[in-house]
Amino acid sequence: MNIIRVETSEEIKEEHLTYPRMTLKDLLYYFAIVAVIFVIFMWVGNFGNYLNPVSPISEDIGNLYKVTYILSGVIFSLFEGAIVYFVIKFWDRGKGR
Amino acid sequence: MSVVKKLEWVTIIGAIAIFIYLGTISGILTYQLNTPQVAAQGDSNDNYITIKVVAQQFFWTFIYPNGTQSTVLHIKVNQLYKLEMQSKDVVHGFFIPSLGYQFDVFPNYITFMYIRFTQPGTYPVYCAQYCGPGHYTMTTEIIVTD
View 1 (cartoon, one colour):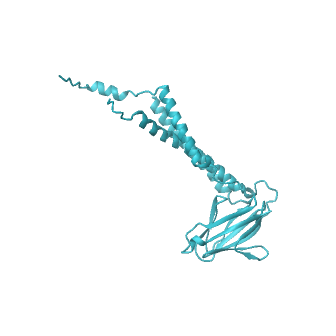
View 2: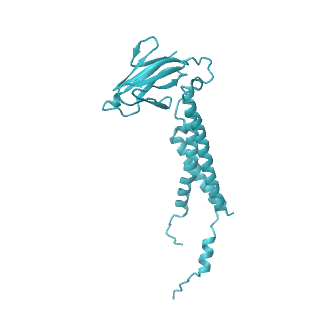
């Protein structure tokens, strides 16, 4: 005989109020993925080196490009790293909940 | 304040800080782009030589101070030049990829830009505004010599 357990409204409310905490292992995995994505991003863009400094102004423009590229890389890798991490962590491996 | 809320604020404030930083240095650079002192950057020789640039479908003409003309720009390394650019017909764009910037060239209006190369070489120039069916052929070179 199967018994179906029905959650009370209090239990549901409590579940929604608590956030699952990331363990140290989770954080290490996440930042490892972020680091890998960041390195790939930088490698693809020649580490932000877009212009050869053949002129004082082009040197300034090149530096500005590099700063913009690195900051974009940090933001990109943080968000993409989160997506990749969640895909791996919550992959449905057929074990059910 | 919960951890999630704190992270949310860090994201918002961090994004604002990044945009303010990039906007400020971009603004300063853009403002200084057309000043000979910046183009020379501390070089005592900030006396520039003026070269007129005439754009027309589909080639560039450079007129030097002594009156000679050429379709390829010949300049000296480390010398500051002022390019006075004007179009004979439609809007063109004087784009030097090696420098990373370009200026539009209009008919009946003089646009000027300062250039100083610190390395000799040959640098391509493209028209960066669609100016007609031969737009893609409107290229030239800047030859920088010692």
